[in-house]
Length: 131
Image (tube, rainbow, N blue to C red):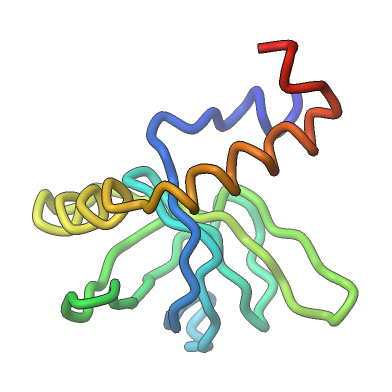
């Protein structure tokens, strides 16, 4: 079973670059988010965390206060610089935090949506006439 089949996203995500703190294995590291949605987020950091491992994440959305939540790692991979990229799925997300994330994602600009659509077509390898 591929990762896409195993962990299908249930909500949209929005690209974001903001600082994030991750507590995993008793070690606190700073990283940054790549994208965020109501179901989870993708993070770059300097710690390798195995799939299934529970973490504590702290972050702040633009114009919002610091948020702290629990999550479980769904994937972890390394890039050419030695940084790790990992996907977090939230565990028991508080309604207030969920609402903040939902609002942030819903404010996605038309330009951001267009870029994501173009990127999807490029990754898919198909033409826009296929849709």
